[in-house]
Image (cartoon, rainbow, N blue to C red; front, side, top):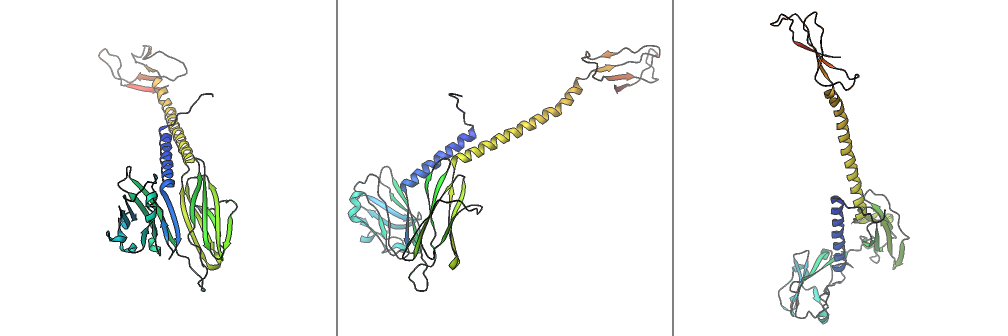
Amino acid sequence: MSGFKLLLTPLESLFVFVCLLMLVGEILSQQNGVKVVVEEDSDAVLPCLINTKEDITLKLFDWKKDGQKEVFMYDAGNHYNNGHGSPDLQFKGRVSHFQDQLMNGNASIKIQNTKMADSGNYICIFPRLQPRQTFNIELVVERLLRDRSGEIPAASPEPYITILDQTKDWSLLQCKVRGASPKPKVEWQDSSGNILPVEEPQVSEKGGRYYVTHNTTVTKTGRYRCVVTQEEISHQINAETFVFICEKLVEDQTTKVAVGWLAVAFVLGAAVLAAVPFGLRAAKHITVWFNRGVAADPEPTTTSNDLTNEIPLLQVGVTGDHQNENGSSKVPPEIVIV
């Protein structure tokens, strides 16, 4: 029908609003969220570049780990490495910045000789800028196990999952395995353990290490994991992610609402049908008979006009030997349904 638009119910409007919030959060995370993966004992560069790329030589920026540990602070030329305070003991003497890049708005830092304990969430804050700018960086330090010769890795590190593309109907997930030996088997699974179909995997080998990429497309909201198995060394490791499919969730909720209304209609219909017999009984006519003696013929008196001869009458008859003041018989009324 041309020009016809279906109005959203309050429940559907709520889910559309949630979808919009998640979309905004996804956009913001793509703009400010970065994940850095390095091997243990190597150096890690954590990027932080303000959007305007203005000179920050005389600005203040502060790096923290997990929201509380001080990593590095720069304030108009003063910083931890030139006698200006001290960072958390975990990072003392291992963190530096790029002095020649400050004029370009680059507040990145380098952590030397990374350890497993350095893994975590880092923030780079410009508290005095208007508006205030904050950047989120996740650092992952991987420990590659080696065989007896100590030359090649003996087990796969944790796979890395990313969402390559997403619409209201589906999400394209990617799983990357870096530096695994021997060659691993990589699978995508849903929360029930069912194996998902994948695109043609990309496999490469360098220096005895295997690099594998598996992509899969999912159409339902839920948890999905990438499982890496190396049967030769009895090793298995996996990573998990949560996918929110907005359109499917709205459809499911709409279906539940429709089923709920059908159930309510069924209950109301059953109640109406149950009330019909009581209405019919209330509509029956009541006829009252009085016994005025043996010779007197009973004359019926009705409380309402007869609508049909087929409806049985509720009669009140008087029988017995009791006498009233005029000498006629008087008995308690007796109700008879005919």
